[in-house]
Image 1 (cartoon, rainbow, N blue to C red):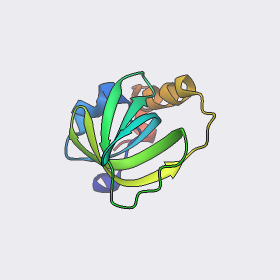
Image 2: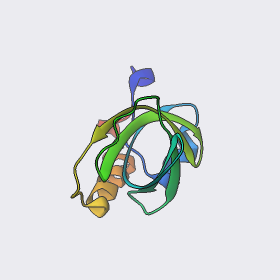
Image 3: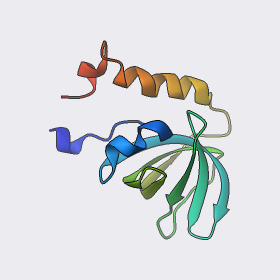
Image 4: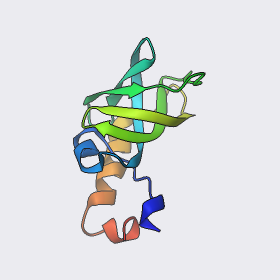
Length: 108
């Protein structure tokens, strides 16, 4: 079952998930061709390689994608999350999933 997990991560956790699928809550900063430059919930800057015809329309989104390297995600899907999201709270949720007291609820 663990091969089907897509953990929610921030920029500092990306290196642990190269070639794996993740969920990445973030704020869209800008677009550059087929890429989006985003601010992670922990404040880091990451490049998301967008899919053709992607529908990124909100300020805050959660990308589901494959981690190419510690600063790049290849988009598979996008969940638009509106224009008001507390990124600090989102980051607290990310970090709680990796806390040894709670990680057994999220990982095998």
